[in-house]
Length: 561
Image (cartoon, rainbow, N blue to C red; front, top):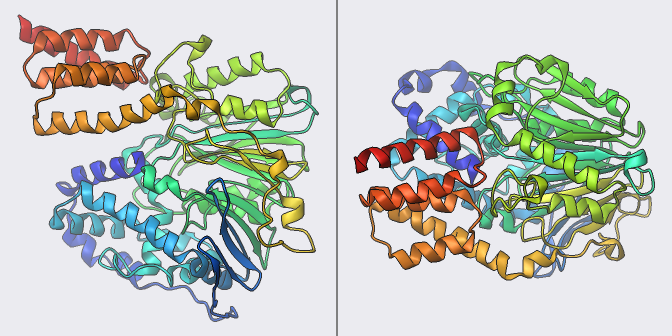
């Protein structure tokens, strides 16, 4: 997981700099550790779940089922506390599995019990003000959900607090490392840019926590007692929103940005977007909600609106907020840099544009829209699945300069005016896109059991998912882990292994760089030099990556003298 790895590396560095004795005696930490939301105002019926079969469960008008594309579909309704209980009762096994996957990675990267305690202490200190910045109704919902969490990880934090931390995991990792943790891409088009003139919005959510974490995707349909019914795509145990649309045809998607690192966690971005979906009918109302919340990371929130037949990007950071509105055009493109006037001279944003892969992907979007003048859902899916570089250059599979980096947790396509949404299934965004009609799901007649999707409107699986090239890519990923392990442990690999490894993904710079690192550590400097030179002739992902390869090449050349 990009986010987990970065968070843990950051915390390892912070261990030697932070005085945890102060942290543990901090009054603010003590208050947050013992805080529980006031739930007395909410009525509650503890759910008694009926198991219909291995993949379908129900409680009153609440359902959980898994469709043939292996997407879990959850429908819940009620007051905030009841929503949490219904969610937890139906998804308990899935939610506990997600938690196990996440924290097993923590244990794997920080095996030392002492360092685990330091990490826990740091997170408690850093998240000490989070509960003060989360709506009370969301806290009540989270409390209900947390009643179905495992007690296995109580040593990290009590169940309620742990669930709160998990909702800020993306933000905390992002803030500590000051990186765009994910290379997400989104776009909105309408009028002359679509086949029928209606708005279409597409997004790739390139958030990777490992294959196990991505296996159980969740499509949630939520009918709250207060506010607007909405759908979102995420994972079991998540009540925030990263990709979603409400019954009014308002959509939200988030893309990470770059900003100054704050000293404390505040409102997780997924709660801001959840609030927008639940309480905003149009763009102005969405902007007003964003202005009310204090975030601790930089994010672009692409908001599409059926009511306005328009889309904007709300660009939030700990210190300022900007709104990017297009003029004289009917398309909005969003990668991982800010575009509003507020950030025109922002040094961190300028550095992000120069050194990351964000601008490259933005230009690739522009290129694809020039080639595809009138988009429909199928053409939008093809854009989200595109694996090539600029001018269709082969840049290697898994290159973050591609729109499809072959690590997406999910891709989504929204048709706000029609209230239709398409959600990708595994692998990545290559599987069949399943269509859902919010007009029917949130109609007065209520949801009909096992009748979530509009299968006639589904978008077919990408043929690439069944190709030999894809099988090679999956083997490449497996062997990359083996090669990294060998480098770390100073193990010996055969030249045949390395040649085969490179043949699996021959256009990707990283296969040559890792091979070069292996040879360098084995003191075979001539071979290392050759591999680093090969890497430099490929499309390298970022400026820091380019400098890293150049640094190793200089070291290899120096060793040969």
